[in-house]
Structure formats: structure tokens, C-alpha cells
Image (tube, rainbow, N blue to C red; front, side, top):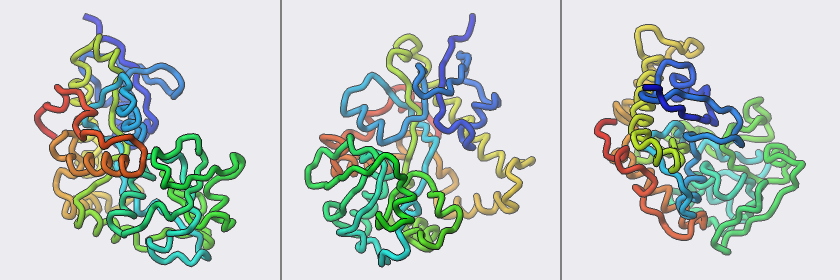
Amino acid sequence: MTDAKLRIHFREPAVDLNLPITDGTVRVDGFKLDFIADEKAEYDVWDNGFGARVVEQADSAPVVSVPAFTNRKFRLSYIYVNSAAGIESPRDLEGRRVGIMMWSNTAGVWARGALQHRYGVDLTSIRWCSTHPQRQSLKPTFKIEGLPKRDTLDSLLVAGQLDAVIEPNVLPSISRKDPRVRRLFRDHKSEEQTYFRETGIFPISHMITLRQEFVDRHPDAPVEVLRAFRRARDEAFNRIVGSDPAILVLSWASAYLEEQRALMGENYWPYNLADNERPLKAFTQYAYEQGVTPRQLPYDGFFHADAAKLPGQ
């Protein structure tokens, strides 16, 4: 019997958790993978941003996810400030111009949630400046202004036209160590480690999602896709701590991994529902509070029932 074709699109095909699938080390049993590079083309499976996913769920979009979370990042280190703006603590952001992408962007939801719940920042007092202002908050208490299309968040922050920026990636000015820009939290590693100790939240950025029409034709797809991504995750870890490590530019990569396990647990990157309840609930709460969704969505409502019940991590 010929394997069914499964068209898969990765926003991040080369990151460590996806690479064992894109390089052919891991297969999805029963399916022949067709990798689709163009995000505007048609595909059946993709690594969906959590912000986009909650909007889809609220709109009853015909998609379903499996609990494979291929991108997770602590987001305190993605809050940047102009060095001359006089911002020394999170509360100093109140009343300032803070640049963001679209309001529903995953990194922004996580960062704003932490600012509000951990640091007591009044999010409604901030002048939010968006490069995609067409996606507004559903709550009018948030002030969101548009930014000129010709400008980048990074250039505006460097020039002092923005006081701070929340961005899903490291700003170019930070990468080149421009002294006019810095992170809000100077020791961001310690800050994020403390955040995890006190909240138990390891923020989820992406979850693997399938089109319902494809699942209707291939009911076994969600479970087989989840199993494949679990194998890919295990292979990614093996490429750090296995007998022939693939990471060479970090001489002590395996030691750093053990340091992270000492803080977060042996299996800190689980692909199941039970071990991810806390971050899933937190994000759906933040999305509702910030007006990304019209109501707080059930944290377990995104997932295919059989995949959600699959034993293991």
C-alpha cells in the first residue's frame, strides 16, 4: 500500500527540534512527506504560532493541533529598551511608546502577560505602537497606534522614536552590540530562570497543527505526526548529549543542557497535554485579558482527542 502524501510547511525548518524531520532522519509512519517552502501555498501540517492558533480557535477555523511544541522561548529577554530612555524597571514602561508587531503575536502576548502578572505593569497605560495595526485588541482600553511601513522596530528604537520594543527575534542592534539599545533585564538569563522557578511556566511559541480536512481523510494522521515529532525531539537531544554530538561551536553544550535539566526537570520539553497544562492555561488567560480572543478558551480545546490521550511524553 502506497503511503499517503503529507504536505508539511515549517516556518523554522532548520531549528534543532524540526531538523530530524527535514533532514530525513525521522519519518511519519504511513505518510510520504512533501516539504512546502512557500507559506502561501497549500499544505496539511505546519508549526503554528500560539497567537495565531488562539485566534483560529476563537473563529472556529477548521484546524486541529497535536501537543508537539517545537518552539518555546522565555520572553523576558525579548523586551528591549533605548538606553537613553531612563527605563530601569518594568514599571518604567508605563506611559511610554512601546513597539510591537501585531497585537496577537505570540511573543508579545507572553511578554505582556509577564509584565502584568509578575511585575505589576498597567498595560493600558502604555502607548503600543504596531507595525501591523489592522489587528487591534478587542478591548478598547488598550491604545494601539500604527507605525510607518517604511520603518522597522529596530531602527525606531535606535533612533529614540520608540522607548522600548517587544520582538519575537533578537534585534539586529542587540546582535551588533549597539550601545544605544539594551535588554530591559540586563541579566536576562537569571531573570528568566527566577521566572520559571516562581511560575513553573515555560512559554510555548509554536504547536504542530493540521487541517481538519486532511484529518478527516486520514484519521490516523494526528497520532502518527505526534509520534514522529516525539522521535524528532529525542533525536535533537541526542545530538547534544549522545555519543557523537552534532553541536561543536558550544564546547560545553551537554553541560549547559544538564544545567537546564537541574532547573526545569529531566524531561522539560514534553510533547503531551498533562505536563503543559500550566503554560497552556496561562497563554489562554493572557490572550483573553489582552483582547486577543473574546473569551478565555479551554486550554485542552486545541487538540485532537486521540493525540491528546497518547501516553508518554
